Length: 477
Image (cartoon, rainbow, N blue to C red; front, top):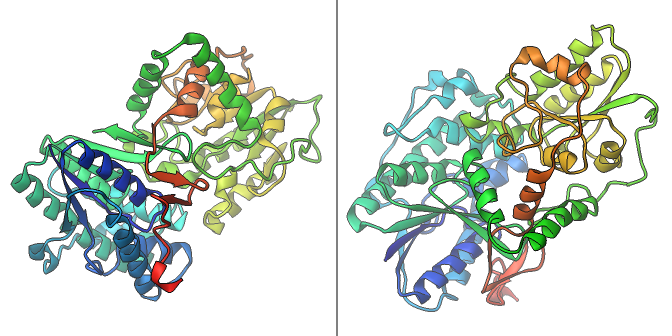
């Protein structure tokens, strides 16, 4: 088979290493492998540069040389370790390098307008650029006009990558292509293009643990129906008792800080700490938030069916309870620990919810344990975080007020309409949930993915490919 690997995020640790892992396996099996990559500073401001600049509040020009040099170093170190023949091509071809693509800048008036921007009938380029910017700034309510130069550049260069890939796919007639993640500007475009041309697209991501990587076919790992399908297919393989034990053990390990292939968000929790005014004799509702920027940056299937966004939903719950005559509940809003670096203006809006009746807001860096809250509450409200399914496993009724990977499974209570939310949250008696599907999900999340053969992780982000740290310049040692 003839296969193309589009390497778009070479400075993001583990992802270039995964592409090398995949390439070596394909070469070993006799396939023809073509790598499409940056051939030395062809981007004026690529996502590798932009992500670093925006996260560190710097100008792209201040980090460009550093990031470009790191990108080249990692690729050079990695490609020379591949055993066998492969070919390298520029991810932006000679014809596209000189082109300039523009869009109607009146669409920058707000995020929703810009998300409607479509290229080549199938590529939701507006949404993909918003996804990149929101992810890099950690600001779910980003004002696009503040980033107009970044958006102009990203729009133009995303289309250059898209058109280069289109020319390559039509000329080379690849049997499949590989891309990373699929949520960001370049990679989402490559997926849409492959789907349009009926070329199978394999999308790589982190696996369940640092020792594994995960590949989906034609669908991303955050595709809601696809996740449901993967969990159930995974559950149907192997010994039932092993699966059952493994699924349950996933949730028990989470109590001790296990977070699979990512950094643990619970490592700073104190399992003995509850909020100062927490009264175990009262009826306590815990609202576990999610990182709002993650919702905004996926696609329309993740749009909240009841509210404009999570913050809007939180305000609704606090207002409805405050103006009611009910006074038997204390509400605790546990802000997700990964929200600590979100835009400060947004965080201040979350903190202001503590002004409502019986509402306590727990900050992201608080030592208050989410699990201690969980075990001492009467019911849980979520907008789709992993604690949705964890709470269900531990027997707590969960009201799910958003689209998430868990909507199709047994367990969460999902309102039929916005009008039903108040009753479910504050009036109706809720029964202990069925946790059988939670165990299935736990089993999947504990071991999905393929084992690396050549990459050895030191932790969730650092490691060596064939004994070499690709980010280290051996000549400078």
